[in-house]
Amino acid sequence: MLKIVAIMLSGMAVGFLLRKRRLRVVPHLVTALIWALLFLLGAEVGSNPQVVGGITTLGLEALWLSLAGMAGTLLCSWLLWRWVSRHRKGGRR
Image 1 (cartoon, rainbow, N blue to C red):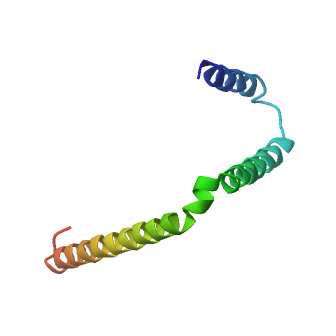
Image 2: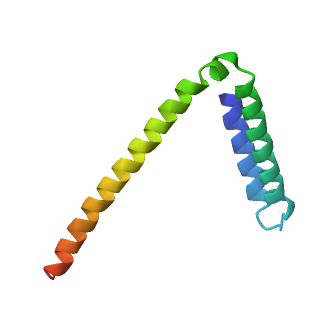
């Protein structure tokens, strides 16, 4: 953990020292590194037999969580819309 904090602080120091320079390659480099990390994460998950063996259970849980999240969002949006509509008709804001 200390190593990670040290790397972050050194990156912040380098960024502070180079803040006036125009570094055009950095956004492209960051994007490429994020894509590489996502690929490696997928390869690591795909090579884990426990995750691959339980993919149906994980898929059903993900489906349930997403449907429950959407239902909660719709319910709260509907309640907020009713509350806002009622206060606008009454003239209060």
